[in-house]
Length: 243
View 1 (cartoon, helix red, strand yellow):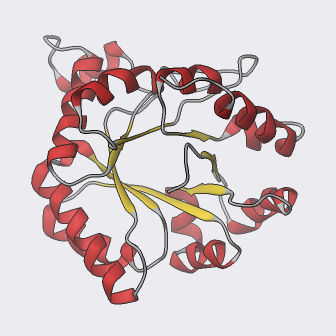
View 2 (cartoon, rainbow, N blue to C red):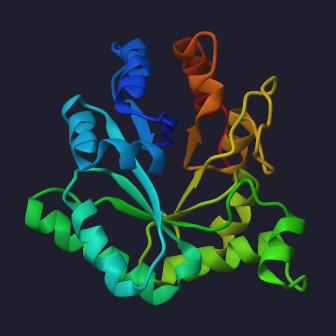
C-alpha cells in the first residue's frame, strides 16, 4: 500500500457515472478509488477488474457482516479480484474477522494475486455519542472507548487496520501494534458542508492526527472542478506534519 493515500469515493449508482469522473483524472498516476455497495451491486466484480486494468488502486468497501463461514466464503471471492483494501464490520467479532482474513488469503493465492489488506469498520463517521448509546443501549462507555476497543479486537483477530474517524487515530495507534492502519472517511474541506457526517475533519487535521490514509467523496465528486479539489486535498494531507 502506498504511503498515506487520498482515496476517491466513487459513490455513484453506475459505472458510467463513475467513469465520467475518472476521465478527468487521466493524467494522474497511482490514483486510489473506493467502490462501495451501491456501485458494486450495480456493476459487479467485473468492474473491479476493469478499474485494476486501467491502473487504479481499488478499495472495495462492502463492510461484510455475517456468520464466519459466510464471510470466509465471500472473502475468498473478493480475494480473487485484485482489490488492495477491503472491509468487514468490526462488530462481527473475532471469529468473523479471522475467517475474513483466511478467506482473502485463500482466494488471492488461488488467483495468483496479492491479498487485499483487511480493514475493520469501528463506528461509522455518521454516528455520534447519542446515536451510539441508543443503538447499544449502554451509556457506560463513550464512542471513543468503543472505537478503540474494536480496533484492539481487530488487531488481535488478524485485521491489518481499521476504518474510523481521524479524531480517534491517536488513541488507536497508542492501543494497537506498530503498522496497524487507520484509514479515515468523514473528510471535508473547511468550506464544505458536513452533510450526513458527524465526526468530520479537514485533510490537514487528519494528517496532523496521524491518519494513514483518507477517503474523500463529495468534497471531490461534487466540486465544480474535481481534479483541482483532489489536488488541494492531496496538498493539505501530504503537506502536513504527521505525528
